[in-house]
Length: 120
Ligand SMILES: [Zn+2]
Image 1 (tube, rainbow, N blue to C red):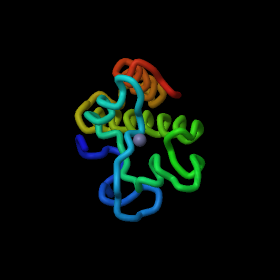
Image 2: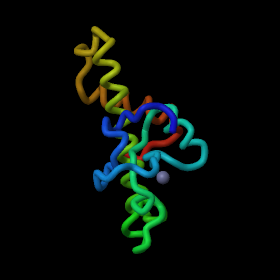
Image 3: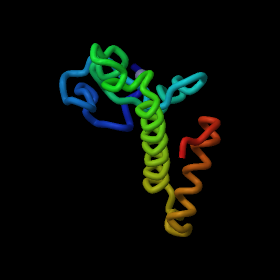
């Protein structure tokens, strides 16, 4: 486990079921991406069966489930962009001088720069 999660404050409990966590899932994953997601705290706690070991087939887990994997990346990107903007808000006294659309575009571009692609 890397940095503290920026997605949830409840790091000891599965984000899906609320049961005591067994593993972590990096919402952003893939070649060269997981390490960045780890450094950035883009992960959620899960049970093994919710992650990649479901006894009932892939539709009950994230990995190998194409729709769940795509939504995972979208959620991870949104979490990253939210943190980017929250950090700006906490530090930049000029935040109000740009429209909210411009700020969201800036966050999107900053994400693209860091992760090399955008899922949104
Ligand atoms: Zn995973």
